[in-house]
Length: 235
Image: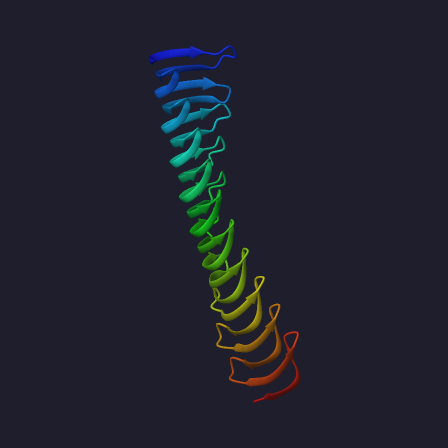
């Protein structure tokens, strides 16, 4: 009871406060995994404390019953890190995760994974802002990348459902998607003013639709594999 140092036979050592024969208050523990300095409650890490691991990792933040719980930052030896809310050793709540390649996710987490709303920035400048489900882009979101900007529905990291893709070359597609391909009904307008509006199958005009070229000529009718095929009218 009070201040003291306890040394175990295996080399572990605790120096700090005791209360009724328990590590309780402020203290430092050196053991097989590294060094913990901070608050204790009845022999367990509880409150604010810093754990420096022998493998080069560092956690500085709040603890509950020996688990990371509350707010804290965990930095890996590689330089990757997570800073934010924790529940029982897992990223849970809001936080910022950085990997060793410089990619950053900022947003909501559930059970150690991005889940909810968030923004992911890749090292090459690509950026997604929107819904996540179990570490996948899922729901509504916007992706800005090398080809342009997509705003719309996602399903497991792919464009699925209704969405609008504005390409950097001036083209625009507004319509339905399936697994990152134009599929269903939609309109694609070229920078020249030419357009196609109608049915799509895996990125091709397929079904019924209306095609207009830059000179104002119009074909309305059936398409097969990106070409007029079947019944139609050309003006």
